[in-house]
Length: 210
Image (cartoon, rainbow, N blue to C red):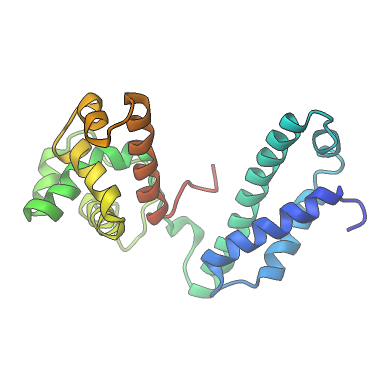
């Protein structure tokens, strides 16, 4: 690995540790780190100028961008290993974007809070099913997706559940949310987004294939 910029070794170690926490039952940390090295090597010296940037602020930004790209490559590798060892195809995996989650949340939370029947939501939502690769077992069934969202919501910390319930179930405005949180409207919006992303992470996070 003598052709790699020294900083890439540190980034690879950090990424491998992060990805291994999620896939430790299916792939070794060392294999993930090796995949990070191979990914970096396949790009030649294109990162050298970015990592040698003299402006410290810009260099940190560059490192974050490279880390993000490396993490996606490492996650793709880990997911392939998991699929191979678990006996399913990569195409069977499902991912949810935040817009889709926000659309389904009112129905999922209503089921959790008011004990409404999720099957009823299928007749309420008329915008079509979320754009995703459906698992054969689900058959693209909207009910299965709603159940996923509800289960993930129930796993959130109480504070995040409350924030999402107020915004998406009780339909409070950002101004009301800001008053409840005792913060600026922009801060309230950011906290809502953070809670939504926590829910997304419980559902598998962003798709690493896009």
